[in-house]
Length: 270
Image 1 (cartoon, rainbow, N blue to C red):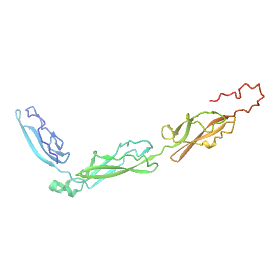
Image 2: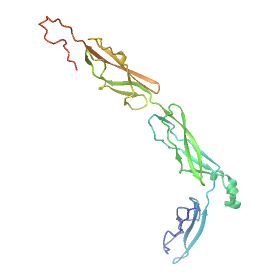
Image 3: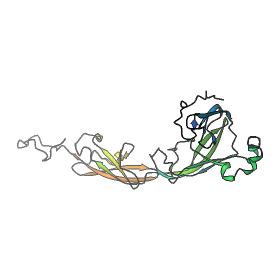
Image 4: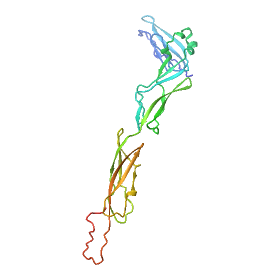
């Protein structure tokens, strides 16, 4: 067990007009002499009191603080128990963690007074707990957050449940890629395509794991606009958008057509 050296917190002085108190890492003593244990260990507590106008009394008391093993742990869930995918920090507002002790375990420390300890005193709220993290892989289903408290060398665990809701996809917005092609091109140039997903319960975001139905592209369909579909799927919800492309065919010219000036289309191909 840790041991505090128990040094006095001040120098004696006849200006003390009431009993003082001391607090260290192991325990504290109030002005009315009530000792409160803070952690298991040994220490010496000091108490000063005025004896008369010119002198004072000093008392010391060596004490040992023993950590009793709790009987059980009780966890009251915090107010917020629903989160949206991507949220990783728990809001622990109103989380309450209590340890309950067995009355019989107090007998050897309290003597004849052990039976007078109230039920409320046997149930102690604590704040030195730890909690597990939100599992981002469990969506739209109940998951459990583990609350842990260490006492007397043992770990006590309780749980409360939360739900991590998936982002509710509503639609997508796209930036169209290249529109114009010339005969001979066999694949679409998608380098300029961007896709932004919009959600009902979360902020919009640009995504890359979308699909493009390139099978709908016919490189031999000339001078006619084609629609290519982009689809994004998330957590079982899908949204689609189309973008247009056109393939200009190279005209076939007669060798004796001396009047052709090279302008086979009015549109500039990029």
